Image (cartoon, rainbow, N blue to C red; front, top):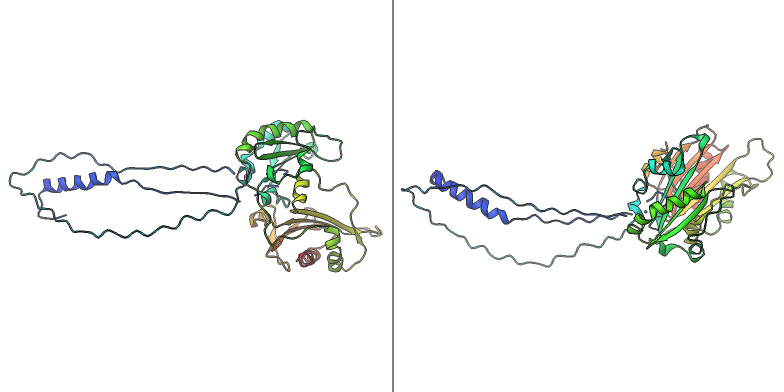
Length: 371
């Protein structure tokens, strides 16, 4: 400011500057997109919101009395050339599809809601979900009872209706059948969202679907195709038997006879889309006192977040062919779990009476066999 101006002139000029700034309004835009999940259905769902704010600058009016001896300075204007505007490239359209419920299970239900529904204290599980509906645009969530004596599990999956095959659509609204052979499930359609809940109790499943439905309709997720390099999953046992036997140095392995087999409507959707597969291996002779057993879970085109392995007490480990991998020892020290990311998807290998090095070798052989 010119030092030759009187105090009143300075005040007048300051008022003009501040007054001219009142019309300035900041502009901005924000767009958020998310790609879970967790499986994530059991249950497995993108709410987007934005808030825009504008502000103005203002200053209190300043009363001025011109000095009788002051001479108003003659303003001098310098011509400023008009800038040439070049076309602005449009913002790129996000390619990552939205997930049902933003991929955040805590926005589906809080623990108290699930506990009240199930009648026992339940808590959201933070363990990695390999068969996660987020890989198809949905969400998978699991709540577990905290008291082992009151063991219950509630699995919820939300998926875009467009990914549900006809054979599963025909079961929408059908009363759940709980015959003691495992969790029973119930599903309904809400707009573009498909919601299915599996539970040990059919009434619990029906209530949970009804409570989640209206909100799922608002956030059904967007159908997501598998990545071009995703594994082609047909028959897990046939594809991997040679690799597993070679890694363990034995030729007497076969499928494990057990009822602990993935099942339910959510599983049928994932397998129909080629996103999931499963197989087991044990010695067929059963002559060993402590025979090894192996359970292999595959998720084509998937990728686990490093935090998922760490939340389950995992530690990073090197595995041939894997981009990242985590080792999670069993609580009783007998075997453990190895979770690995590879170019074609996620492989989850759990074993008993097998060392960490043996499971590392098996996992590397599986990744190599799948290509």
